[in-house]
Length: 218
Image (cartoon, rainbow, N blue to C red):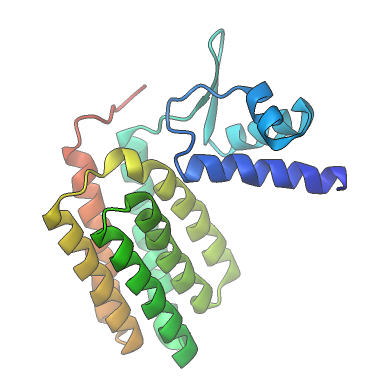
C-alpha cells in the first residue's frame, strides 16, 4: 500500500471509530494502541490524529494527552442552526431532481432505519438517520452542498449517542418526522419537505436544550 493510501486508510478508520462511538467523546486516545490494532506504525496514526484535531473531532489537552472531543451544548446548537439552512436548500433541490430510483432508495433506507430504531439498535439507527440526509443531499446534485451536509452529519452521528436518550415517544416522533419528510420529497412537495426537515432539526435543538448532561463549556 502506498504511504498516501495508508494515511487515508488510517484516517478513515480512526474517524469511523469516532463516528460509530467505538471511541466515545471524552475518551483518552492512545496512538500506540491504534497503531497496533491497525497493524501500522505510529506515524500515520499521528498524522490522522492531527487531521482529526483540525476537524475538531479530537483534542490535544496540554499535559494530559489526546482525547476524543467533547462538543459543548452551545456549539451543537449553533451547528444545528446552520444545518437547518443547508437542509432546507438540500430538500428543495432534491424535490426538483429526484427520480423513481431515488425515491425507492430513500424509502428502502427509511425502512431499515425504522427496523433498527424499533428494535432498540440505536447506533445502527443513528447511522441510517444520517444516511437518509446524505442521500437527499446527493440527489440534490450540488457537490459543495453535499460536502457541507456530510461534514455536519459526521458531527451529528458522533454526538447523537451521548445526547439522545430514546423513549417510545421520541422513537415515534422520529419515525413520523422522517416518514413525513420522505413522503413530501417523493410527492415533490418542496414546501412540506422544508417544513418536515425544519421540525425534525428543531426537535433535536429542543432536546439538546433540555439535556443537562451537556456542558456549555468543558
